[in-house]
Length: 351
Ligand code: NAD
Image (cartoon, rainbow, N blue to C red; front, side):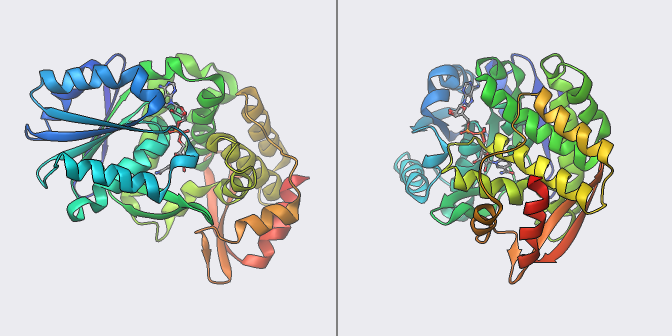
């Protein structure tokens, strides 16, 4: 088992290993006193891993109560959040109890949000079961639900007390879902870790999963520690996301998040090359690496549609927008542009 410390206040540990779900309860005893907890999961993960986690919590002396919501991004809503909060209050959870998020990014974002608002905030622990959640969403404390006008429009910052990642859970992911984790990791490599990028460029990621999760989490932690609430550098983590969220919304969420990020990253690379911010060879390396890892680099939407769909994005600040421009593998810059100019970047990103 390896560990990464996320040094925010209070600091927390991300534990990454094989077959560690069965020890989840013991690991939690190091950060939480014995008591009640709500284990929030979705209907797919419930069938696969809930029993193992509940047994381990009971063996460690905790009193776990499980709630499974219908799986899928379309259920990442205020309605589901209300159901989770009602469930927590029926147990009833108190301020000395905690929440466990067992699942992918949708579960982590909603269970974290519920923990953040329940009784004005109680602790929560992340057990990510998708590759994407392990390398990205389980760390950093962003929680949210989608509103009808856009993704993640309601939410808060609430850091977990512990993250437990068992890479064995990736074995049951569909190839499409596995690729989503590759997309967020490749993104992280382009932002700040050329060695992480090269695993995807030249190697077989399935043989380096612990190393990938460790590197991606460390890279994210380094940024989050500098800028927890996204006043500056944390915006770098949005590389590909302004384009990505727009195509995700246009697809009515039929496109998985990681695939949308891949298309967004490809668009950011093409636009950067056309604008003279990145050389042609680096752009090609990014596109080829995405394709090698079963990710899309283009979709059928037109530039106007993507631009219209981006107008509700959180990254808009008044009439301006911060976009992340990749310069080379491992270095990106934050560029504030007039919102109207984004359409030009989208057009360049599609050619
Ligand atoms: P998800 O949670 O919907 O999981 C994808 C699918 O895989 C679901 O059907 C789920 O039931 C299933 N699943 C989960 N674990 C499984 C397993 N081990 N085996 C088989 N099936 C499994 O989605 P995701 O791709 O994990 O995460 C995407 C979400 O994460 C988006 O809502 C996105 O906005 C969010 N996100 C948040 C952050 C953040 O910083 N908070 C960062 C990136 C993404």
